[in-house]
Each structure stands twice: as structure tokens, then as C-alpha cells.
Length: 340
Image (cartoon, rainbow, N blue to C red):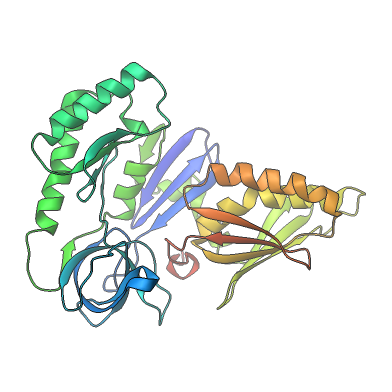
């Protein structure tokens, strides 16, 4: 793999390669697999559950969803809801009553008015300029707008053009009609180009062969992830949680456990991201003293800070395992990787 940050697209797969290493992955699922994240659906409220902060919703095709952020949902009402993640077989599709329309530069918030700028942009003059550009782009539309960090330096015309596309998507979604899909989700390639910062996009013939991506994808079918110097960790999903087991392997040096645990903590978010795994994560690190846990937590926290998937570090169990709670917004990758 060559250096820099490259978005590689082949077929229905988008891969982010950073300094020669596979860093992120999005794969289009098969047609007809069911609701996808970022789709907007018209759903029928079947049962309101105000004490649980949501409602059970019936989707077109018979799927059942659990709708959150819809406190005023009334039984029998037809409402717009966004699919927020992947639903495990037999479980309700996660839905939100607060739909969003995402672009590379901005996010349209139909149910929350006002123009805001991402906190990552610190320059006051630039923030003020973007706020003004956002208000001009919205014109009289009764919606809100969030200017993303990628909007820094973007011209007013470019921002206005993107906001116009987002407004058109909202108009499509809110046009009315029977239960069913109101606005489609972006493809893997579209999401990658929208959300990933990269030096170049390469969608030429054989790009995955040229960058060595097929070999990296094949490795994701196996639980084992190498950590260097013979150490490795196994990342295995079960029905209840994702189990991670860290091993020193062939490394028998005095600091083998500390080195393997720090390497595992630094690489775990990337492994979970590439494998599309979420929910409860339980990590069984190589045996270490309690005094060494702080360093492991710090390494993991730094890696999570750069990870786009919301993850909460819950803490250590009495048996010395580390627990995490990760948003299940992607579907498992392994079944989607084609044989090549």
C-alpha cells in the first residue's frame, strides 16, 4: 500500500487507506437486505411507550422498529423516522424521530432551527462567516443547519449548492404518501467521499489489488489480529457481546504483557470499525497488575478519540476485564466480504 490518505472504491466497497494501512471500511449490503442506516421511512406508530422514551413502529414490508426521540408520538400516527443503525436478526430496527440530512459541508436539521458551527472550528471570524453563509443558504426555510469542520474555507456558493441538495432531500422525504421509504441512504462510496478526509480518491480498475486491500479484507474474516512481535488478539462476536482476548503469543520477554496490552488498546477501535462490530465489548487483556490499567485506558481513550463510532468505556469488572458499550451503527463486515 502507498502512503498518504487514500479513498479506494471498487464495486460496492469503499476503503480508507492511511499511510499504507487499512483504516476504515464501508460496504454496500445486498439489495433487499432491509432498512439501512440514514434511510428515512414513513412509519406507523403501533404502540407509544412514553416511559421508555419512544414507541414501537410498524414499517413497510412488516419490519418492526423502535422509535426514539419522538415524545409526542401517538398510536396510529404516520411519522417520518430515520434508521440510525443496523438491526440484529429478530430485533427491532433502531429509529429516530429527529431526522438529519448530511452533506460533506453541512447537516440539515429539519426539527431544530438555528445555524451552528462545529466546535472543532476555533477561528472566530471563520465561524461568523460560516454562520452568515448558512443563514443565507437556508433563506426562509424553517429548518436548522450545522456547518461541519470540512466547511472551513468553503465558499458561500459551494455551501449554498450543498444546502440546496439537502433541502431537496427533505422536500422529498416530507412530501407525504403511504408507509415506506421516503429518502434513500447514500452508497458506501458516497458516504466515504462525504465523511472521510483524504488526499485522493482512487476508483480506477484494480485499485484494491494495487493497494493490497484484498489481503487486508481477507484477514477480517478471521478472528485473529496481529499485534507485532508474535502477540495477537482474537475479536469474536457472540449473541450477547463481542469477546476480545489478548495474547502475548511467542513473545516471552519480561514486558510482553504490557506491550501486547498497549498495542491491543491502540488498535481495538480500528479492528471494531473494520469488522463492523458494536454493542457490548468485553476485553480480556493479558495478565497485568492493577497499576498498569491506567496506561491501557489512556491508550484506548486516545484511539477512541479518533474513532467516528460512539463508544463508552464502562470500566473494569471484578475479574479484570474491560467493558465498553459501542453504538451498533454498522452491520458485521465478514459476511459481506466477497471471495476473490
